[in-house]
Length: 255
Image 1 (tube, helix red, strand yellow):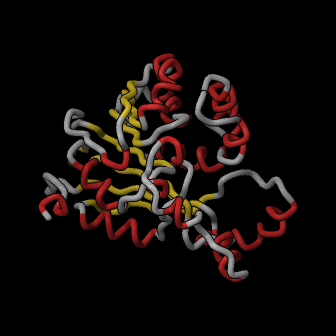
Image 2 (cartoon, rainbow, N blue to C red):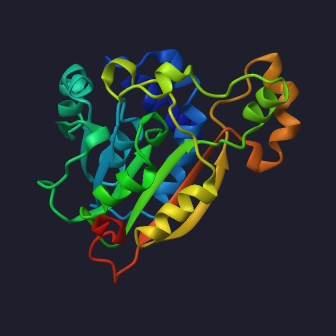
Image 3 (cartoon, rainbow, N blue to C red):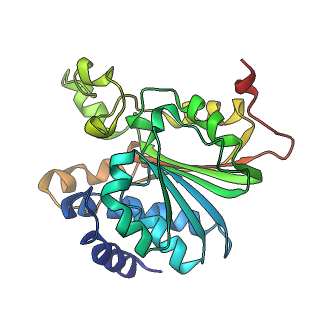
């Protein structure tokens, strides 16, 4: 599937979504497409997929239709309520949960893939704690795929150079994660931090890729583009990790 085909599907889906607008899609489609291509290189037809904080679920919808995947999404109850008809139309199972205090005890242990796409930066818990709760649902040699803003991006380096903050006000950063303030970035990560969490929880990192979020649009985008040829300065990274077959549960869960 090329970019134009992918964008066309996302655009048609966007009119059915009640929790995000079309402008957000335009600012994110390149990231979505690059993430989809990565997932496509690992996934098999009929795979069972669990998506944490799926929101608009563009990628999940295409996985369900193109690869005949069985897709389950979990998100804040309000998000699920707003988009319940949308998920049903895509034959996606949806459940309202508190993502910051995730309880997946009733979800079984047979998921081939768990997706955490643009989620972990919004939570006021460490990624490792989320991962240990997810691990019990993943089959041996199953994959966890994470996409999240790159703390070492050019955007952040520029703001630091000009002595500007790179995160929200402290009152928001330290607030409880919930639907009403889900857009707040509470903690952003370097890839090395995600890799450490993966290893602690019994996973092996298979891939780290730095990606753009959108096509070049503004004058500033074009000015900054030469810097983005240095891939680690790009705004987002995607990581794929595989659960090692010797892991029955996360080592951190015993602490």
